Picture 1 (cartoon, rainbow, N blue to C red):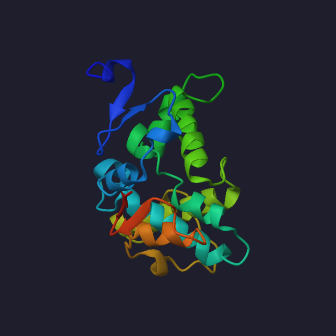
Picture 2 (picture 1 turned 90 degrees about the vertical axis):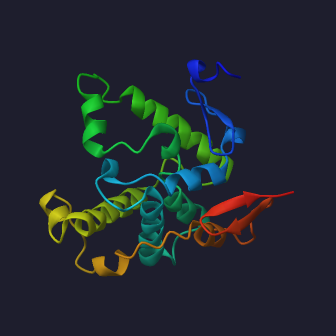
Length: 205
């Protein structure tokens, strides 16, 4: 296994090896993804907001505005829409755009890599992918909130981001990253084999 890295594998917090080019759902450990997400900082490190904060914020926006009409799997998709990024990196949007320059299809190799991981994660954790439009809308609203949290009021709007008139940004400006509670709430029963402890899920027999 020492040469796995040269073959496109990466090693995770738990010691699992994950194939970056053909991810096996059985190797995707939720505790790995949640732990790493709590350590990754948004905006390429130019903030104090973590990827885990962002994921929980998107979930909360979707749940707040659509909780009556959405099933648990869509709320779970919102919560886990970026859960693959500890494997493929949380690239800022301008960098993703830069990687598409000169690519006729408009889809970069990074886009393909990201889509492969999302399909594997969605298969493992049983949620909707490709994501419904409401998740992208919530993602953009979270970006607006986080830009204003990081650089001050009006920053997100200066980037061309906008929100509905009834969107209360202040309601979502607190970083509450209790992933376990939100994840559990998307199921009617606790996922078999998992026990919720703080930010992470501890696998147990």
